[in-house]
Length: 401
Image 1 (cartoon, helix red, strand yellow):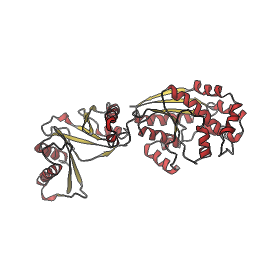
Image 2: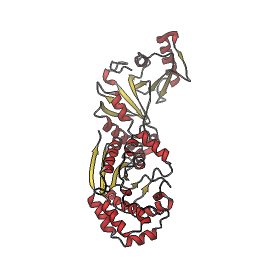
Image 3: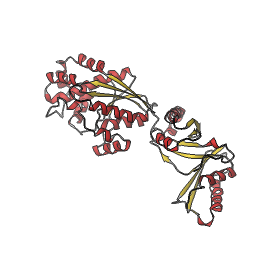
Image 4: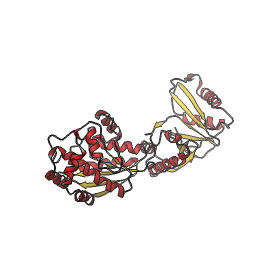
């Protein structure tokens, strides 16, 4: 599609991208807030690759583009903006049948096809023609222009020409690129994800972003007892996920010495649960300080010993913030599939030395009881251990693009 020349009486710089959303359209009186957040996120994601501004029109957003914009670069950015259902590179034309005919001619000028379909949609019933009238007029125009070698095929056309008819300007495009869906990041508040560096927790963070949450990350590591590999993986994962929320914070919490002190006090079968309860306590303090309203984990029910129903309950028993587990009903193959689709899988499977592997017992309990763990914790200086983790945390900040 050639968008660099004047179409329908409009100047050459009238090239636009038209963005559609779906779930946001159901938000009733809150819809303007959701749309405003989505528009702001799109501007943030595309401002350095050719987007001049984002405009709101009925049921859609328009991206006004700079001359010489890079469609592939903008397309890549929009694929990561939550809240977008689909988007299209479009020609804007005056809402006049002759102008629309010229716009359609321009759109299909260099495209060979034998079958086509016109799909017009009238946004306002007050407009002078029905959608069917536009379909007929533009369809006849294409047949006259291309001759007997082409025909209309409503079921399986080689080319589908979309026309969105608005009161002043209308929009012509040929293809719809799928967006990620969901809600715009930031509309649902901030949560804190306990990022292990494995396959699961990055997917959990992604799914919370898709529900409109801004995600703060906390990674527990066992340096200097183990290598920095897990920290390096956490940094790579947060860098990749930041493309969905544009800024991120990652707290790297030293946990090795805390684990060592747990080993000196606790029976081996309870150690993993005690580690996790301490992580929750430390994460909550950091989360509250940064304004986060919930914790997020990559737990999947019964995947490992610490994720039995009983053990999940005893870990959550020490929490004062809600704990969200967006993967709880997914199996490992489903989680791995989504990790591949969002690009985190290859990073997550890099070898490292996870902190929970340090001082890990051979036979951890699968049926922890809160009262038993509480008795063990009475022999520990919990306040000191938690404060050690909080004060030792190192903040890394990320910005995209």
